[in-house]
Image (cartoon, rainbow, N blue to C red; front, side, top):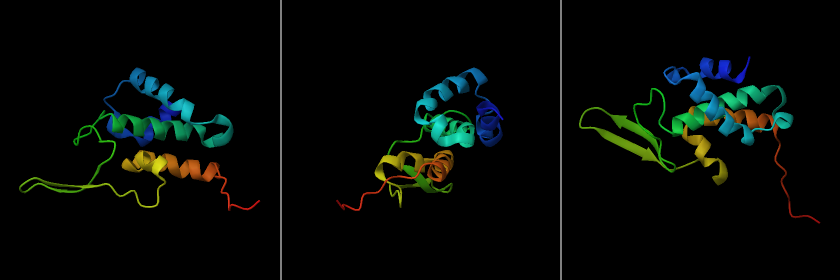
Length: 125
């Protein structure tokens, strides 16, 4: 499947966003995904990263509006309108914290972690 087809399959909340706009967001996502490193999961990574970026921009069927760069809703209730925000990013590295704000970002991280193994230095010579 092409990235746009995958995007439409996994990110149904953006059904109102025109293909042309989605493809522009995909172009923004492409520099962050290496075809060589992601291999046969490249199109999946592009689809999820695009959905993440659209969600962060408040596009699609997004009743919460634009997702803030530092906060995510951890709980809410209707009676007396109570909303709780979480700033904890758990085990995510600070550089990846933004991706933990959406389910699409988490999916992208999952694919990336399967395909790219970070180099860890133990401080040995």
